[in-house]
Amino acid sequence: MDEQKLLNIPEDICLPDIDGTCMPFVFVADEAFSISKHVLRPYARKNLTNLKRIFNYRLTRARRMVECAFGILANKWRIFHRPLDVNPEFCDSIVKAACILHNLVRLHDGKQVDQEDIESTTYFNNIAPSNKRGKQTALNNRTYFARYFTSPAGNVSWQYEYI
Image 1 (tube, helix red, strand yellow):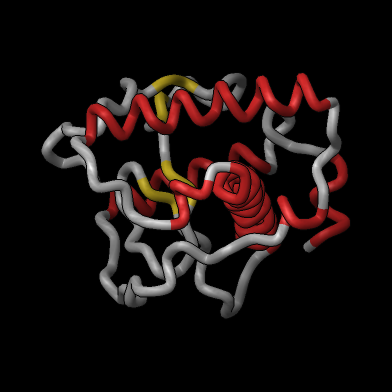
Image 2: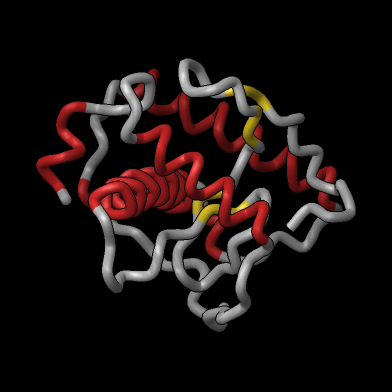
């Protein structure tokens, strides 16, 4: 995804309490995206071990949270219902301003999230599924995150109830 270093993704950092291996910052994705150093996608749904099931659950949960947050933001600020036709640098400012304004309005109104905010729109309908096999490094990264999610440092007690 960021082979040309255009996204300013931070340098890798070490996750606590496994073995000190530094891991990249990643985007959480679904099956439509190819796995890469900075893109994590779930394991295929066949013959899943508990480790893989937990990883898929945790990744999917994170992706849903991001989609829900963006859905709430987009429903409040309708500019995000269409592509932004501006320079990428200005796009960053628009997104940051919308987040700040959204939080300010929420704080001022004292409103809880309502159902209309939560109803999600799928913004990636036109992306064709990819059957590309990821690089070995990307596959190793996914395995490392899966191990982390089942380690004492990355484990959450309730994750076993959902697999």
